[in-house]
Image 1 (cartoon, rainbow, N blue to C red):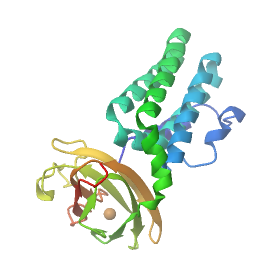
Image 2: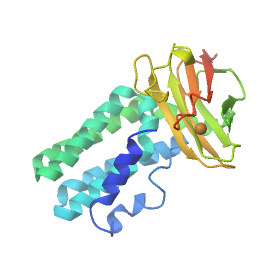
Image 3: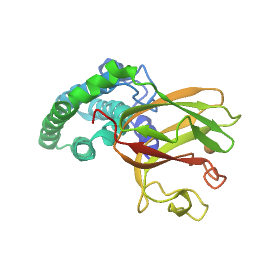
Image 4: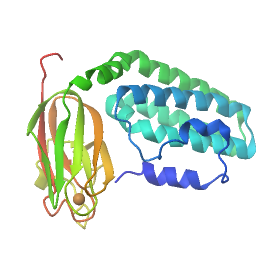
Length: 259
Ligand SMILES: [Cu+2]
């Protein structure tokens, strides 16, 4: 369970009922939707950059709504950005926070500077990973890894996969909602940090949160694309009590020929 959705809901709640034409580009999809292809990531970051560039010329409620739209768009790509390049992800988060803070404080100079810096960071991201995100699409070629969610098991089709951009095709075969969280860790499942209810602390010591798909409804499938370096991972469902009931599976990511 991530904070992003909660934040998104909170932001969507401020501002008025009408988001106006300015944010129409972000209105077609639910905020919770995850990016699943390189093309969507490229389009999403380009939209974030364009929305940010528009904020400095707005005031009052208009600016608030533009910031909400900006975050809505960002939440759809941030997981993939984070999984690909944590440093640039953190830079983007900082600049987005500065834009929002500047709007909240009526500090136009701060908004302008942060929007410009955000554009620079996004350009850096494209420069560093453009080829990768591009191949992700072309490489729809690389077969997705099927993962079945049942009560209370996570069952990937393989215990070991090769490194690189991987798409998980997650199918919920149970009669209740589940989720799939991907963490990188050298700990065995029994040693993962947990809270007093036995649910995994996804930000705990020895655990690197990679990404997740939440709220996978019974009988539905959803895809999650992540760039996985070589290492040991655990796929788990962290809905209350599900991990404790055994809803996890280790996954080894091994060096692939091309990398
Ligand atoms: Cu579950």
